[in-house]
Length: 298
Ligand code: UTP
Image 1 (cartoon, rainbow, N blue to C red):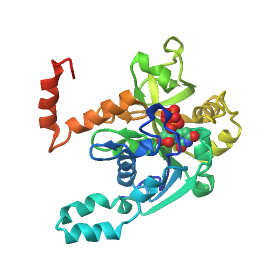
Image 2: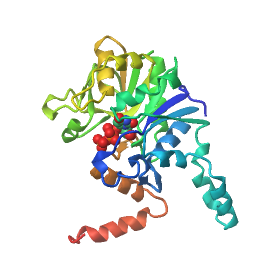
Image 3: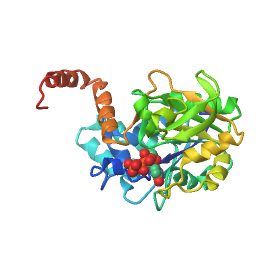
Image 4: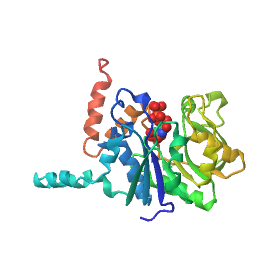
């Protein structure tokens, strides 16, 4: 299906330190959720939203992502020969998006720096950024991405960000926006990275999906590295919003929850939500978990 925005960047170059040692020799974006790697959920969402050109911003040690999205005729042949034909569609993730490219971020200097590596790929067009460690919705987030893209176009925005209401104890983990109005779609006055709950301008957290015009690159160029030497995307969005640019927030709807697998607690929660929703295994897993709920030994 044709989309409003043809190009997408998927940054997958972070170190995943919060998931060590699981991520010492494998990317966090390749951890399984619902029987497939997290990043495949992201690419399926983008494919359904009509993306035609996708650039992964990758890094050393992330080669399995490239392997996963590369055609593997030997494996397909072996499956056919051994009567496992039914598995063939599930192993061909290379067909999802017509054109897939890779570039490297040599040092993980933050999400803002990762996006700067997509500048030549993007050229003068608007583009989607979809974080490789976040899934939207148990059944794919294409509508959320499409809706955010539509808002971006209709408002003639510089940036549109999907946002999700989080619990007060969660605001310190995300970029939090200050909306100029209430509603599902609103202009953003500013954005604060990981505020203390008391100082938070709202409970609306950026949810890992963004649409940008190329003006974001100028803003990123002007961002100073933070105390850890990282270029924060939030800083660039804030400078656009506070400088009079049009940054629009789009609230995720029910059924479009963001599943971020960046720490062990959220990975466990995401893993179980998808496992419980599994058509084949969900109900037995539910019974299994119930039988262990009262058993304190685990
Ligand atoms: P995170 O900040 O959650 O990822 O970035 P991280 O840096 O891997 O996490 P920790 O703190 O070390 O555990 C969200 C997304 O942005 C990518 C990550 O790969 C992830 O998909 N990212 C982050 C980059 O591509 N480059 C970076 O420098 C940082």
